[in-house]
Image 1 (cartoon, helix red, strand yellow):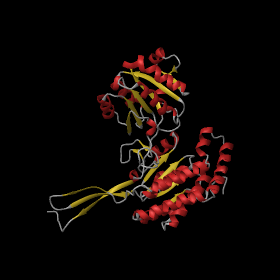
Image 2 (cartoon, helix red, strand yellow):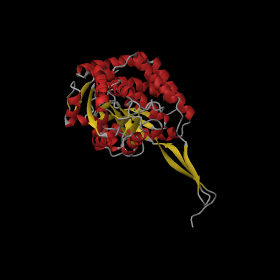
Image 3 (spheres, helix red, strand yellow):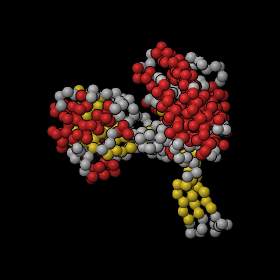
Image 4 (tube, rainbow, N blue to C red):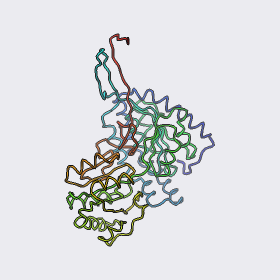
Length: 428
């Protein structure tokens, strides 16, 4: 197992071109592979990960040593670290994907024309997907398994920090492919850490990449969105809002605020800004903020909030547009739903927003006027996750408006084509 992530001297451009060509070749038989064969491959992958746990742990230990020597933060090291429990979770995640209904071939819609033509819109694989991600080695398994289930070939480019771990996991994925008689090149891992490899993927590898999915921090996603010459499914940031309406149940509002912010502060679905209806500032604001404070959350607020709740630091203009990914929340009073909508549309990254309210009209206005990928009523923003939507694992949350939006799971990794059945019809 390598403990240094160096290019072996092979020209990166040539290497990536070869990987792209192999992926395109593998995509053709994969697109028509039976649901049973893909299921068998995924089950075999999960079994291989369980069986080869010690190999994966040894590889991960090398990455952890390298990461510590490189000065990775505690948070990054935690994302990188694997243990028995996490490896079992990876295997269980693959099994869960295997058990999902195969979307390929689904007839999404069908209708008849007056001339007798019968038209079907049918779900098909995208083709070749490039996934570029950082640190978390579990993404290697999640992305590989999801793309396979949707009938796509995938090129995985993980972070250099996790290259040894990703190689060990990838070997298990290839074992599963081969056990089911599927092409081993259906899931390829870029074997070098050269940043030029990312550049080649963003160019599309000579037309061999159909979609790029980045999963990582702001700098990675910005680069992908700026340089990509192929479609991108991505979100730049998760600046998520929780709005407490005047009709909100106070106990519910306090509990949801704590969960939305503090359950896991480092995920993209964590609430970063709390908005409270000015009409209930005297009754709702302090109990909700006390609950957050008591849970260990630092509060940054505007002057009006601070005049009511002293245990808060001043919020700057920058705070309203900041994804903290930490136990910090910005707080502001607004004039009802209209005020919440105005603030959210100004500062949101269009990822996830939630309203706590009993007033049906308030909820309807919130849902109708806010243009974010995920909107929740009386529920925590931390439900912004494919697994929680019943979609199984997902590669990320897409905030764009084309094709995939929200959790990118198996169905979002497909496109569609039209099948038209006739009986000799000719156009006059």
